[in-house]
Image 1 (cartoon, rainbow, N blue to C red):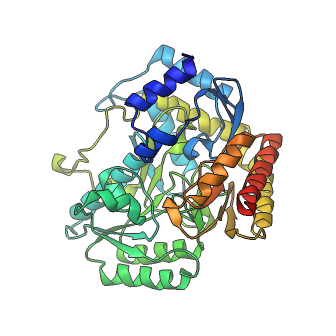
Image 2: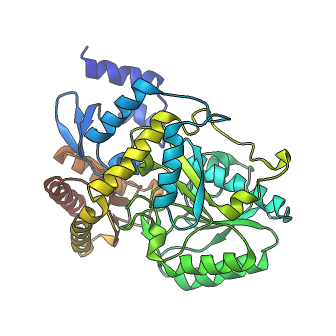
Length: 431
């Protein structure tokens, strides 16, 4: 038995895959067996390469194996891999806190570290509820989020989700969340309902949580920046924390470093992950203003009794610092702009192909729908199979086909990837 067959056999015997109907996987799926990755490509056991069209679930923003990140990880591993952050300070967490606060939207001075995007959001929710209680508003336990929202996998973050299929298995477990309509044609209703909900329930709302500008798991759905400005105005008026989940949209995915810059507003709490360590290690952060932080000072009973084993670990912190340095030194955001334009040109052209619905782009994201069947639709998977044969890993969101490659993907690789997307979509629609 070859190594590849042995890997698949053991995988199917023991590994429970995420977001995967396992009966179908076990009986019908022949998985791609990846043995290494470099730049914008995966390589299988036979040595064939596949372009990584979604930057490994949106986190490998600098591609795979960036030499500066590899070297930073190696150097830090030789000095200090792990130390608890409770009552201990270490250089990398301290320097990262200062550098991240400088790179973040204005006013976010305090950094709480965690493990991934879900835990960053979970931290934000707990902060918002405890903050409300400690400023004398203990009835504020509800949240406001958009229809189609996705904020992670931990229980609280999952229950914020506005994608019904993701909540289906959670039964009667609830986090009280009021929803604002989103999507095409819903803008005017969204502005009005957001204001109505916050003003009508202001005594009960602990926070408004938004993926700024672009809803990722909902199908790469952009929305108008005015909604962010509306949210900022109404939450400021009532002293309610505005929470921006920039786990996907941050680090230049939509163009500027932070998607909130499209609207010119700053949140009270910011969640970052994915691009934070460029896919090299799991690590995240939740940033807060001094006003939020100050509510936890004073009597020890006011402390934020929350944390993770690897909170602020030195390996992740060193990587996160190097990611910020690479962004500065290699002008990642500036050099991504013409790449974003190439993505836009391709998807605008595909929008004219018969059978394509709703082609759209924002920054380094291009998306289109093959039908209206949503996350459980099969159309995108036919495009996935066609693209895989051509040498691209193009994992869809059901009926939504999209690209979200590394921001520094070489121009030749991007050109090849976009050609494969076009060829694969046309093949499926013509068949």
